Every structure is written in structure tokens, then in C-alpha cells.
Length: 434
Ligand code: TXA
Ligand code: MG
Image 1: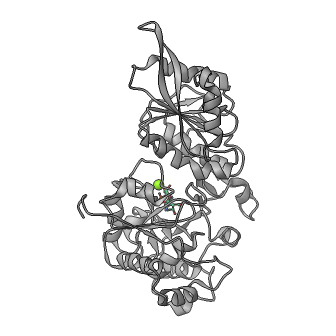
Image 2 (image 1 turned 180 degrees about the vertical axis):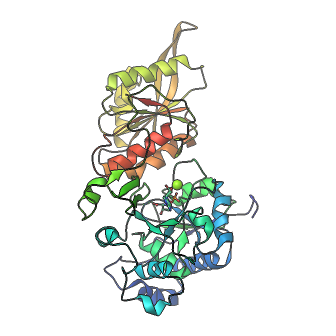
Image 3 (image 1 turned 45 degrees about the horizontal axis):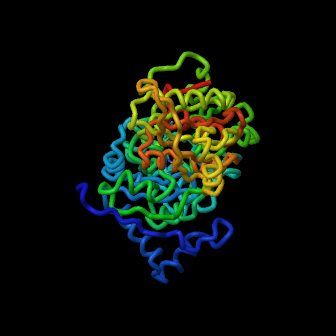
């Protein structure tokens, strides 16, 4: 499709799916589609596109929006790489609606009737506890790709393994069920950009490149799934995400799980690395400067002020993304505006941007001037921070901010902290400050 074709956003959040404790999905869907509500029609249309078209469909999951394609058709999977402009040497995650669908993937040639009462038979024992605890949910496991596999080669990037997850989002599972295909789905952003957590984010990045975006509202988790490999001994975490290391360690066989991702977290106290290095990812247009949580607020405020003073007049605005401790606007607002600014910041919804101006000394002209800044408080709860993080980076881009200063978290806390810091480190590339 050409860039001037319209991309439609189809709302599906009103679909009345109550989750795993309600009726089984197939039964529920059979009755729902009869009613021909706009939402059911949207799901049917998306499912039909997934089966027949080579243009991917964007859909909500509990982590981030995915860009889905039939994982068994090469041309369809190539459509993902095309739409995202993503290099094709990075394997994709396969999404299934049920253990039965996974069982069929692991046993090419097996009929649907053979799979229903032996759901974990073909899955290595090491994963059983994990799956009973975290599936459906934000956990991706690595499995051997069987010989004669129905998965397109483009999904695995020619590896002998594949990554798979069963999303917790009932809408995601419903779409997979309606399409009756496992779906390969990376995050539905343009390559290198922050992952999308709303349908509008997807539209911003991919309009004109895809036909349909299913809008299920904002994502509940906000960062991608945790990717684990239990085929190696000891098992490892390949990407931190929605399930934390402490939760994994409570499962039999995973007490000694190791971290096998390298986001620079072990090197941050060394000399800053060159910008644009391989870690750059999840990046807004603006430069991101991440401060480790132990860095004093005073030092941060000084650094921001200096950067603003040193930059050319009229061409510099900054964003401040706060989490636990930083004061509103890092206290950089005009003293005379203090009360008004604080009131606006306090009244703003969590994760929204509040503009204010920073009084500065113009060293060249030896006078005072001011430059624009935006304050964004993500909240103090790590779940809220994860949910709001990518949206905040994108909102700063919408305001054409030049540099975003972010207050980091202690990654070693065993839950979502590591995922949040991992995404921030990648967004910041070399720009890490202790
Ligand atoms: O939350 C998520 O996982 C989202 C939503 C849409 O479900 N999806 C997602 O997919 O993040 P993607 O394709 O962007 O992430 C793929 C990750 C990469 O880090 C990739 O290296 C890893 O999974 N991966 C996939 N298959 C693999 C394999 N066979 N071996 C090792 N890593 C694999
Ligand atoms: Mg991604």
C-alpha cells in the first residue's frame, strides 16, 4: 500500500470479554459474532486480513501494541519488517491463544482433535511451573522449533528455536482465535521508536503503511514481555519485562535464573560511551539523558540549567520526566511563578506534560532570558511508571523537546524496575549520568 492510503482505527474496547474465568473463548466468541456489533465486525475484519493479506494488523496486548501477521506465511511476516522498516535478523515472538495452538505448532501434522487434553506434553518440563503461573501473561519462552515446523523462516530468523507467548489481553487472544493462526508480532512502532501503548501511538508511526489498528485502549503493563530461555542451564532472562526476576525465582528450576541481557547496566559507572551505539532503541527524536537514582537532585538541576544556558537561544527546550524524588520542574521555574506553576503541575493528570519557563543567564549578551521546559510526573508506583513511560517520551517529541532528562529507578528491585531501567538505558544510549 502507498503512504497516502488511510489507516483505520477500529475501536474494540467495548467488547464484553470478562477474562479467563468467564466462558471459554471459543464459546463466547461464537455467540458474540452472531450479534454483529461493530466491535465483533472489527475483529472479524482484522482476522480476515490476517488470514489473507500480507499487510500486518496492529492490535492491543497487555504489554504494548503488537503488529501482527500470520506466523505461518512468509509473505505475511515479511510485511511486518516492511511496515516497521525493521532489520530482518531479529527474530519475532509468536503469539498463541491457547496451549492447544502451541501444541499443534510443536507437533506439525497433529490435528486439532488430538491436542485438547494433553496441553503441556511437548513443552520441556522446566517451563511447566512458569506457564501455570504466568500464562496467559507478559512472559515469552524460547522453545525448539520442530522439524517440519509450520512457522515461516522469517519469524525465527533461521534460528533453531522460537519465542512464544500467550497474551493476557483477552482481545489479543480473541483476535488470534478468530484468525485461527499463531501471530508473529513485534511492537507496532516504527523501528527504533518507543513502543506504542495506545492505538494513537501506532497511528502516529505507521499510518499509511497498514490498513487496520484495533483500538483496545491503553495497555495495562506498558513494557514488553520478559523473554526467558529455559533450554540453557542455568536458565536465563534474555529481556527484562512484565514479569520480574523475583517472581521467576520462586518457580521450581528457576531459583538460579541468570541475567543474559546487556543493556549497559553493569557499566554505567564507567566513562560515558559514544552516542548512537548499538543500545539505542526505544528512542524518541529528542536526546534522552538518564540519571541514576543516586544522583542528587541538586546536581541534576545544575546540569539541566547549564545545558540550557550553553545551548543556542531560541532553539532549545527541555523535558523533565520524574519518578520518585525529583521536585516539580526540578525547581527551575521562575521564582515569581512558583505558586502558579506548582499548582498547574499538581493538578495535571499523572503522565501529562505541563509547560513552564526557565529563567537563564545569557552569557554572551550578559543579560537574563528564559527558555521553555515541560514537566512530566509518572507517579511513584513502578506499575504506573511502566504504563506511562513510552507515552511520556512520545508526548515530549510531540512538543519538539530537544533533550529529555529522566529520573531513573533502582534496577535491582526484582520486579518491573529492571524493565523500566532497561528501556530507559537503551533510549538514552551513552547519555547516562551517575
Ligand atoms: O510484549 C511483547 O513481547 C511484545 C507484544 C507485542 O507481545 N512483542 C515484542 O516482540 O516485544 P519483539 O519481536 O519486538 O521482541 C522479540 C524479542 C527480541 O528481544 C528477540 O531477540 C527475542 O524476543 N526473541 C525472539 N525469538 C527468539 C529466539 N528464538 N531466541 C532468542 N530470542 C528471541
Ligand atoms: Mg520492539
